[in-house]
Every structure is written in C-alpha cells, then in structure tokens.
Length: 501
Image (cartoon, rainbow, N blue to C red; front, top):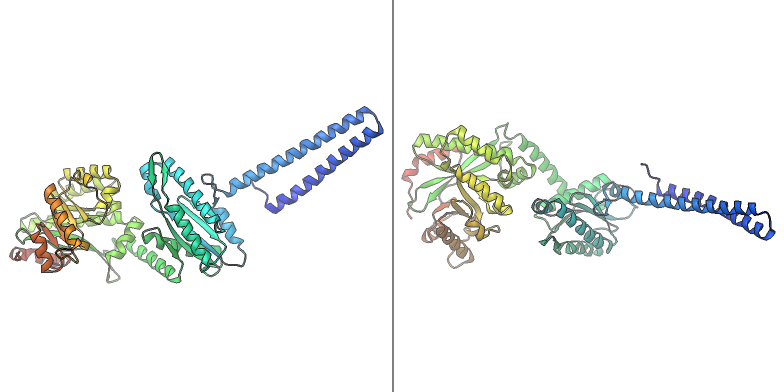
C-alpha cells in the first residue's frame, strides 16, 4: 500500500475538513432558520438527517486519518522494538540540513551467544529492553535511535563529534547498556561496539557516511567490543587491505601458498624430543604473513574451516611419513580453531582422515583453547569424549588466559595442559607468574594430566620449569619453528640431542 506523504496528507485533511464544515454549517444554519421560522416539520427532519450525515462523514474521515497514521508508523518503524527502521534512517540521512550531524552505528556485543544459549524468545525480549535503553539515552542528548537489523542499531545526533555534548551522549549510551538484563531467572550483561562518522566531514552523502561509520564499527568489534571508534581515513585503507588480503587468502590453498612449520617440544624427564607442534604459515606474494594477521581474518570470514581441514590432513600425512621412516610414533600437535571445533562436520572429517591415512591416532594431539570448551561446556565434553574414543590426544591450549572452571576441568577427557607463554616470558622465582605456573603444574599432577610450557626462551626458564616438575617445554631455547625438511633433519639428529636437565 502506498501511503501519502506528510505534505499530501495535510493538504487532503484541509480539503476534507473544509467541505465537511461547509456541509455541517449549512445543516446547522438550516435547522436554526427552520426552527425560528416555524416551517414544515419534514424540512426539519431532512436537516437533522443532513447534520447526522455530516457528523458521520467527519468521524469517518478522522478514523481514516488515524488508520493512515498507524500504517505510516508501522511502515517506518521496526515492529519488535518500535524504533525507526533502516529505510527511514536512510531517508533521514537524505534530508539532513547543512549542519554537522554524527552517525553512530552500533552492535550489541556477543548477542548471538545469548540467542544460542537462551533461544530467540529470550533474545527478542532482551532486544526490546536494549532498544528502550538506547532510545532513552539517545533522546536525552537530542539523538534519534534506529534499529537496522538483528543486533545492529544507529543513532543520529545533531552535533559534531568534537562537541563537548557528544562525549556525554556516548558515555550515557554505553552506561545505559552496562546494566544487566534480567529475564526468566537469567541475568545477562552486554555492551556496545560503536563506530562514528560526522556529516559532512566524513561523508557528504549517505552512502559514504554509512560506509565510513561501518569501517569504524568493524574496528571497534575487532578491538574486543565495548569501544567507540571514530572514523579516520586510515580505517578505510585498513579495510581495503583486509578485503584484499581476504581475497588472496581465499585462493591461498589452490595456489599452494600455505605451509606447515614444525616447532619441536622437549621432554624434561630425559631431554628427548617429545614431538612437534604444527604451525601454519602463509607465503603471500613471496613473503610470510604473520599468523596474528591472517588467522583472525580466516576465522572471521569462515575460511578457517577449509584451512583447518588442510592443516589436519598435512599433519596426519607428515606423522605417518615420519613414523614409517624412523620406526617410532611421533606426536604432532595441531591447533583447532573455535569455528572448526564447533562445526558439525569436524568429527566426521577427522574420522574419515584417520581412516584414509591409516595413522596411529595417538600421533595426533588436538590443541583446543579453554575459551572454546567453556563456551558450550556440555557439548564440548561430548565432542572431546568422541575424539578421545578415536584414540586422539587432547590438550587445552593457552591455559590460564581464559575462564576455566575447575569443576568442569576434571570432566574434560584431556591429556595435557599447555601453559600460555605470557606466564613464561618473565618467569622468575617469587613472582605472580611463578605462582600461576606452579599451580598449573600441581593441578596437572593431581589430575593425572601432563603439563607443557610454551615460550621457553632461555636456560633459566627451563631450569625453573624442570625444578617445579613440568613435563615438557616448547620455545626458541629448544628449537624454532622450521619447514618440514629442516624438521626432518632435526628429527634425525634428535636422539643425540639430549640436553642436560
């Protein structure tokens, strides 16, 4: 249904009202004349009917306008939250006056986890509550709130980002969101990631303004959330570079640009080679790209599923080759990404891979971060149990950096805990790092789980870890990551590389 514009509706309203007033006025005047002139009663009845008809028409016209108002509101607003929607937001941007306005795009952090944990009905109730908070915070500072889609919102402020009032407006917006949301005996805390761009400085047309605000928002999200990032030209450059890198990464497998390097792990019991960790490298345009750059990009884009499958296959084939060549089983540890671990195809693919390569499953150790197993604990315990039943080794990576629950840890069917390098880098007796490392080693010993420390770079760190009973170490002190051929030479000479404890 096509609704009239506000100007058109006002014009029609004036015409209808004028006509009805003329009819009603004529009927009233006729009644008065007939009453005082004592004319025929039939004329009197006719005029009463005319007045009634005019009254009915007036009621009908006003009812129609009320219906049109309701339809117009529904056409311009989100039915769940009552906030104006994306199309109306874009119309507002098209009609901005020649004065500074700031667009703030935001997303509710980790909202998808809420839906995954408590369901869509809970998510809808939370979204309505959050929308009301956002509306109140925005209107207190002259802003107008909009719901774009899902957990994404926008606020339009009639001011520049440099205005003192803008800082207060954004502080209020974030503060409103930090209060917990309660529903169905659950209490959920949430925050906002925000990106801001100012009209006309950061974009003189709606498309440019929104693109730049979104570039700022994505930077806030990658920064961990609960941030406001103002737009800058560098953000577009970074966004273009990310898109270019993502495009190249999509073709990295077919171009043969991905490599596995292997970093040796040492047993502190006798100084022997305990195994290797397979570390992914990308040689893009002839130069190695840091995993800290491309791994998050692969996670974000979903490419990590295919890449992770490739890594597992290469590690299995390498383990099979080394075992056949040297006559002894050698463990290769492989990092499993969060998206890979939770993907429905993960377990079937590993089962098929083990059957195809015919390797001893005990040669492969899957490293899973504690954040992944704690996000959906019961499901993680089930998957871990199935993986262990296949004969694979399991370890918790970066232990101590997340939010592990000891109550759950004893239920995880794991073989090893890996102490994060952040606790080893400045390791010294009597420090907080030392207390944490000793506690993890003691925890592993009491649970019957071996412990490996990564990031060991000098003999002093190794000596402390050996003294405290750590089982294995990994780091530059024992060996750097190396390509397969170099790792093979290292393996060949490892029997004579027993270091003094």
